[in-house]
Amino acid sequence: MNHLRYRDDLETIQPNEERIAHEIVEHMGHTQLAAAGRHRHAHRDAHAKSHALLTGTLRVLDNLPDELAQGAFATAGEHEVVARLSSAPGDIRSDEVPAPRGFALKILGVEGERMPDHPDSTNQDLLMVNFPVLAFGTVARYQEMLGLLESQAERPAAVQRGVAATARAVEKGVERLGRTPSATLQGLARDYAHPLGETYHTQGALRYGDAVAKLSLAPVGAVAELTGRPIEPDFDSNADAIARHFRDAGADYELRVQLCTDLERMPIEDAAVLWDPALSPHRTVATLHLPPQDLSSPARRVHGDDHLSFSPFNGLAAHRPLGSIMRVRRLAYAQSSDLRHRLNAVAPAEPMSASDIPA
Picture 1 (cartoon, rainbow, N blue to C red):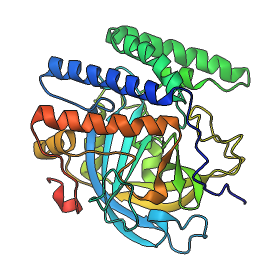
Picture 2: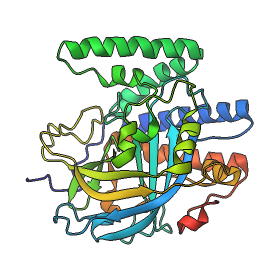
Picture 3: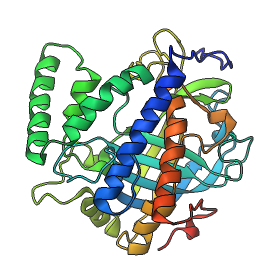
């Protein structure tokens, strides 16, 4: 399979991108400040609500083909990891309101030339959501969507549940006609499936050494049996369901890479376009094991909420995020982290080993 070779000129700056990006980040900062005022505590401006902070091991596979043995995955071996599971909104909301979930993975002790944003770190962050594309794939469309997203978030929980139920019905009707629902419709139709059974995606593209790729994390083994399984009938919170699982069992995933093979049909600048697996399959480069562990520690929860940060720009130059959505995230994540730590008067922490995470 011939993949697209990475070049520095693959990205295309969008019209008015710098102005739009700064307007988006300014808007998100005001929203974050308003939420901090309501809660008397600052949270992230996206993925504010944590469900779990986990530690485990990532094993890079032996004998990967040259095109997959790149960057953090160039050498077979094991790395400690820290993972944070969350809900996507930038405010703390009931889990009875369906929302996309996030899986932020921090791979510890990765060697190589780094991006300039976090020069003293030795970690590689990968931020993923349980949906392969964004409804707003460019900065211009994201700015247009901000008002819609916020108006939806401000509705009562019962209304939001009703919107999601209607979206699911429409989605099924579209599928019966043999068509693919839009990213917006699918996002509104998120259900109550167990977070540990979901497959998570970087959504945006990133450099993958001498290639361009998107990454995904898919459940395997026993935890794959949770795919699509609701966490009702008692309606546990996401955090309760995850904590109960890890009291007795672990979870295993495969980290997979989808190389870009056709820039027209697998665009970098529009994260709303699904990269068709028929053009390039998802190929496993590493396995993730999260062993049984106690998630009830208040110190662990505080550490994940207040001290830790995850950013797609904390990592190797070989995995630099690409595309306008990723470029605006560079500004947004830095501002969000700085504001959260400053308002809460806590120092940011970057773990050197899993033992740095409170038990």
